[in-house]
Length: 279
Image (cartoon, rainbow, N blue to C red; front, side, top):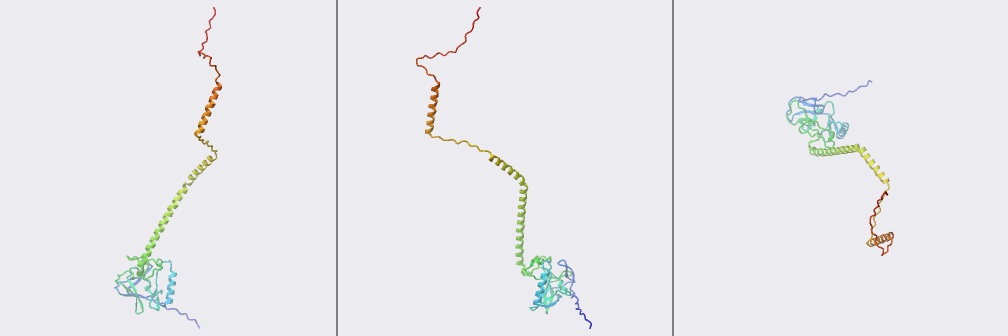
């Protein structure tokens, strides 16, 4: 018996008279209005595989893990009701190409157990269709927003979390400024240390010479002057009397003794006599 190969019938992409795919400035491809779309118009259905809540959670987590750090914020899992989700990650779901915007012109609504993309306001021909992905705040840094609208907050976050996001961004900015200041301070300190190190050889040489001089001076014997001894007044008087007595005794020895009756000689300067020649 010949084996029969079952081929899964490929579904045709869902189309709409209101939109068509094209290259997007926000992210790769997007859906654009092919004509003017009035507000509240049901533009295109969001189709996909109907799965249980448990399976939907598993697929959403796997998709998030696979795209972590890539910046790709494509979301395909939509909540249908309390029991089922719609996994829109199928080729024929044209609505999966719609990108996120902080100022969207569309939203997803459940109409008769189906998910439809509905216009929030009048949309001009050629404008890109967008809706709010409604991500939470937990991993906002993994999902930067590139919508470019005037209301853009920089990240794909649901509007209800915008006040909390603003606080987190302010704290982050403050931390970055402190880090930058610390880095600048460190760089300045290192620059000063480098400059000091460059001047170190001269300073070292001078220090070495100074140390050598000190060592040489230390090797020389130090001669101390004898301290002057202070004498008491009594000692000074006794010393003075002793010196006087010694002086008097020396004078007595040198002078010859003379009689009192001996007259003093007249001291006259002697003159030599002139010699006469004999005739």
